[in-house]
Image (tube, rainbow, N blue to C red; front, side):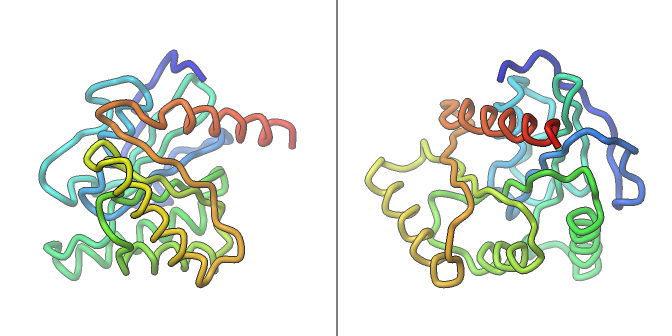
Length: 201
């Protein structure tokens, strides 16, 4: 897929404020500081479409971006940021849950995982919950450039093994780097493939 246009549409505090649309939506979510905004910018080939920050928990709203006039990329608030107040964490959780459970155009949820880390309980719990809810998802390992190839393969294998304790068949898995562009084409081609399936229905 060639990205010809990427435009910010709106930010919403809740699913009820999200824009009316029949276009397929691909939402990106992950623990705070997983590199979500950087990956989004790399995907759409724009340096500052999604705001990046060294401070975890920067994304606090549901952000819609229109890509090629054909589909929406949705940047969801991160989860697992301990420094947020309990009230803020509860509000983010309600916002995320409302979007995931109620947003009809949601076609696929990309769950981002830091490839440098061993399986984190907050990630495993979130992935398990999505499975229980029947939400279509794919796993995206970020920051792959920060590890040697053998260490990267070992960490991903560990994740696969851990997830197979609960999953009979794993969701699609992508390995990415916002720095080098690794995995960009694979992700965009997968979205294009999904769009083709949506339009056939």
